[in-house]
Length: 327
Image (cartoon, rainbow, N blue to C red; front, side, top):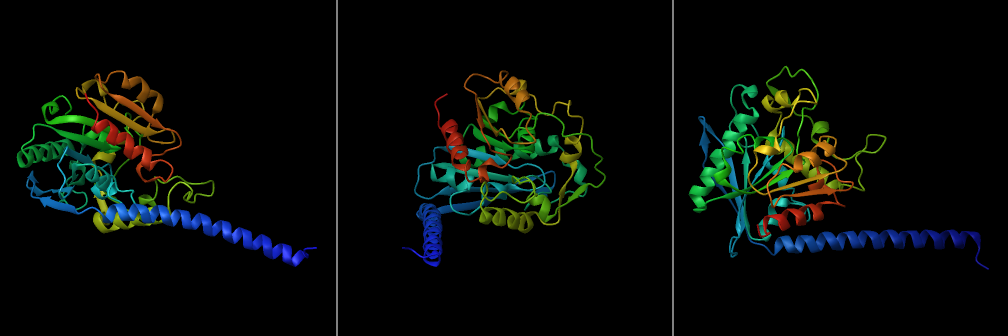
């Protein structure tokens, strides 16, 4: 007969073994991802770019020894700059994922953000202002790489800034990706300061939370949260321009992004658990996009699908599939 103490010890032993098995599996997955990363010889180059008297940060990451299949420019949203696409933990980085698949992956920091110089007036950095920075980057990439068009991916506010001049810049753009599109105003709020005061809590605001307000670590890994927030402080510091925020903080019936002006094939990709995305309006507006466009809604994913453990690989694969598809 097994005594009660022996039974308790056996149960404890089995629990420990099970936990070790889960930990070992997770470690193996992370190690495999790290091996893929280490096998690549990345080349990251910063190119001079000036607009409106300010130096802008424009960088390109590629893998040495690969034949480039194209150029893609990634455009960030409000508050935090282009580092959001390059969270260097396991294989979460969208920048490195696309580079491993043959793309020259460009990132720009809009004026006042990240490593770009800042204007005196943060309210000056509106969606139209950002669109001009993006156009300057597209023109520079065409000049440097001797290409006709560049693919374009915008996230959040970046879906607005990359579409402000959609009809004006159509000859510069190949395929377009709108990730977590913000179609309407976020609500009427008074924005009094021209620069937003950045805080740690705000940097982690988009991660999914449980009822107690804690980050759901079953959805996002702690090292991803740590790397993302640390980069926000490292690259964005204490503040970022409020021009785009003041524009976006308007009535929820105000249209900020009009799909009808877009003439290039477009992937619209978002999660169905994203508080910034009006999904019924996205579905309705999608019908206005040109032939070859695609709508992908990831069940359970939020505004940061590209960083969420259950969803980031699907996000990466869907973006890659679209950028490499025949049109």
